[in-house]
Each structure stands twice: as C-alpha cells, then as structure tokens.
Length: 152
Image (cartoon, rainbow, N blue to C red; front, side):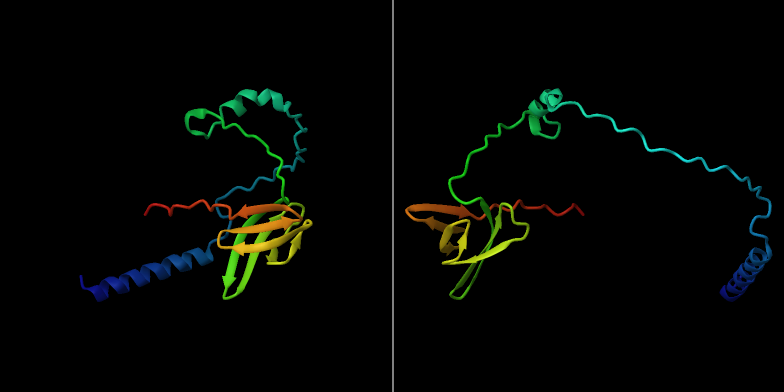
C-alpha cells in the first residue's frame, strides 16, 4: 500500500470518528446519580504536647548524621544586633548591606553612617568595622552555603 493511500485511509477514519463523536449524546450510556451534599466540619484542634516531651528528638535529630544533636549556646553580642548580608565596592564608594534586628528590609550603610548608636568606621571587603566611643565591633560577611546543581 502506498503512502498516499495510507494517508487517505487515515484521514477518512479520523473524519468518521469525529462525526460519530459530534452526533453522540454527552451522557449516552452513562447513568447519572444525584448524591446529597453533606457538609463536613473541620477536625477539632488537638493540643500539642509540651516541648519537654520532645527531649529525645532534640537530642537525636532525625536529619543529622549520626543522629547526634549539636550543642547550641546563645551568646550575648556586645555590638549592634545585625548581620552583614553583602558589600558593594565601586571605585571609592563602599556600601554595606546589613540585616538589623527589628527591621524587615536590608539597610544600606556607608562609612560614617550610623546604626543602633554605632558608627560605620570602615567598609572592607568581607567585613565592616563599627565604633561607639572607645568600643569597636566587626561584622564578617556571613558564609553562603554552596548549592550543588541537580544531577543530569
């Protein structure tokens, strides 16, 4: 059979199927049953157990290698409550982008600028130096965790 005859036969078969589908009733041969709608109430709130109930989970975290927790120690910071998010140096202009506790957006600081009573003394590659009177404080650029691309 030639390609032309095969293409013609396929076109005729497709046209017959489309005509049959167009003339068929949408629910022909299908029984429709009306089911009553029953409202469903949300489940009652379940009280959570106290954090002390999770002591073993905290000691042996599920997603840590070796299932050993890391000791966390909170240290009161002597300087301002901020973390250095980025530094832009363009020619003689140096700008530090910082996250300041209690402020939603990033704050841009230049040398001589102030934040929480501290003066920006220097904006250096990778860190900033702040002073308040005789006190000095340095904030390093926080490390960025490298993200490995997905395997191909």
